[in-house]
Image (cartoon, rainbow, N blue to C red; front, side, top):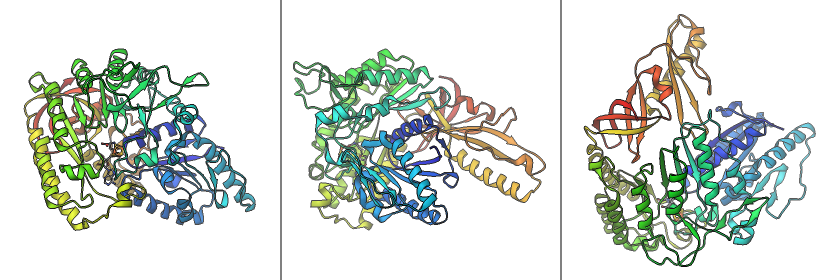
Length: 587
Ligand code: SAM
Ligand code: SF4
């Protein structure tokens, strides 16, 4: 039983990838997708619980759907991801509009649950019956009126059971890779879950224990993506550099090698790839394999790195591999040793800086056109943070010289150690002020880092039209709609946007000029305007190897063809946020 689905994704890249996989699965079963929630029979939210703010957005969306459902009882509403895992049945009680919930560790079950929910809805509508049959496997919880919930990670299942039964690997393996359905860039998961238990973080509770995917599966996925024309791959994991897969211990289910839980091996040398007596693929080995075996991937990057135990083996592979980007996203979280210890990060500020200095010594070669860029994360207003701690974090930002830094106000998350044991005692106005001060420092640093590119030529991967251009599109669409409604006789410029499942924007610009409403149509998603008609320049957004944003103008007729390509851009001016330049040729 298939319906029209609207899927909205909140939060991180891991969620974007999950949404892409879920979309592929549902499409294969005949579901169609719509970018307009009002047109959908099924509304799914893939949620994030890392900060309270992200959850609030979902609560407010669900509130709106409750109003709609009063007049549209056939609507099926599903909550996927971290909120489903964290809130469990409480979410359904608070929001009876929700028909189904699936935690991140059970996403492979979504098609069956959705089919069930649609049938249930249909039968309820037909005769008002309320279902309440028994669940299966101990993880299925039935609530009132046919609601179904699946969770799984919170129990942090034993490694043997999880390895044998982890059908999630099947979801990654089932990824549909089509030449027509990507923007030249793709995420590939290498590790699920997290074992670090930083005291503020909900991820180990919602995504479960660390599971490393078999390298064969990862390399094969990269090959399939490259064959379909993908040129940029970002490897995903919460602590990618701690990837390790022990060969010979894997379990085979249905002929497919299953992933295994992370194990801790004793390194024979703090900064090398050597593990005493073990046949292990480490992160360095994995990077090397992908680089060697998949030459079609022109850019290989990875997020997120963990500052502890980042071996020279990885740095050496990056240095020796021209297609591995010299970019590290390696969150420090704080510049205060006292707070780092309370956060359970397992390193000191000194150790963090030692790592950055080592990484730069290996990889920062601006004179060869290969600089290393670094990005960070900081949490501001962690419990008990003093002005002295805050000053230490400011000093850290000056020392680390990140190209950009994500600064988050501390959000106390139920279930975490910090929530249970530490008072959220930094007042909101103090958090806000400190946040502003850190942003100011970082902006100055970012502007200086950008300025180093002035007058240089960079190669950049074209992601789509710039945000400025997207806003212009929206205005043009509204204008065209108004024209269509009013039948006014003026021309309008329409940009056709086709958003891929990842949310990348592809656009084709076409000037739709005419005398009446008929000529002022706005094309729906996934249509391609047959350009040929020239328009003014379109501002394109691209990324350097080091993940700096590059903005340049392209001729409207060339814009669509450039997306997913690597181009050369000469940098003419810079700001803290971006490099601005003119195209100098194809990469
Ligand atoms: N695994 C990555 C690491 O440890 O570096 C980060 C993953 S986490 C999902 C992304 C970022 O969210 C973290 O680096 C942290 O800065 C921020 N974060 C996590 N929990 C938070 C909380 N309770 N309040 C504010 N920010 C938080
Ligand atoms: Fe959260 Fe820490 Fe794991 Fe990152 S390493 S996902 S911050 S617990």
